[in-house]
Image (cartoon, rainbow, N blue to C red; front, side, top):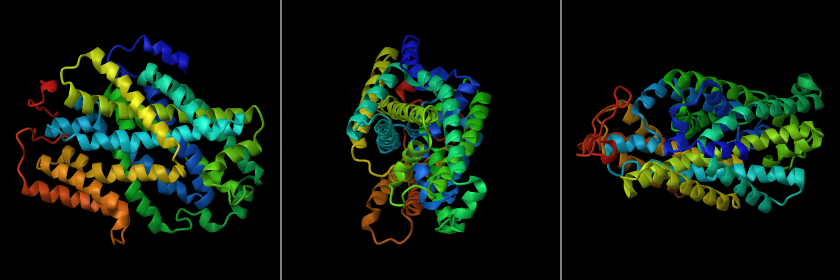
Length: 463
């Protein structure tokens, strides 16, 4: 991986090359990078643990809705987004509204999502080092930090996409092998289904259909504004590739994502019931697979974690480089200066993620928290930018800031409804009501991005 990164280090000349692979990536590379990025720590570690605790219903609660909303983003929004010729979600808000409208989505993407999710990959890698090499978790986190940082700084998205394409094959082989061996260990599918309680086999699961629908509505919409998918849409060489390759990648990822839940369900037959969910994957692999098959599975996991971390870091780097540095610090920065700051921002995001990694206790819960907060604040403003000319800058800012504050304060409020649904309701009410009561500011371009290319002459860097 470091060799590939060193190769691309010589070929990267602009920050667009570094952050979105120069708008020129082919079909199979895009497909592979989607699979590898989607199948990170949450899939291998978190979802095996979830299958262990709630059974197959976990697939419908998380993986299925994630795939559905990702396909909606690709099939409905990929072409109009590429037409804008932007790099980040926050950049879309900056062009539409001018001024500092992109600050809130940028902060959410860079710090609330990218930092903790990168930290999850480091924690996952440290558990592999611990199981296979006996390295302590704190030392393993630091080793993960160093390797990830070096690879990301020198290789950027071009190296990530190529290694993703290669590693997607390893990931598929690894999780398929582990699923086959685990199910066989408990007597095949017949033995697994006979020994499992009905609630662990059903779509509803132990918590019922209401819980499934609740998670679908609260977690799924995040994938409409997942910056990693946006980067792959922009990185594709043309619109056909952006739609076809990304869609195929998510369909394959959706099929693969079922296997961790199946592994977790089977693990209930032989794994100690009091084992922490995040350790189930490593326990099963270490218990059932000897070398070289066990090595293949752990290699697949490391590949997924490494490439996932790099993608999340570059997502945050894009926000810091474009939304903060370019738009607010140095509007006239040239290509070399932007490329230099892109790499500095990688160091910032990776360093913060390393610090956060030492505080993570539950991978699945941490990931859900990041998804829900980002989704409740951003999804409705994003849809308004795409479809509603009447949305105002004041309406968007009040909606995003107000929703973020109230969602963070939710645990201290006497409210009975789910906090994500509460956040979406607040976001919608604030966005619509404030927009109807306020006028467009002078810095806005009053257009709907889904139907036409935004043009904002008040932004110096867009002139």
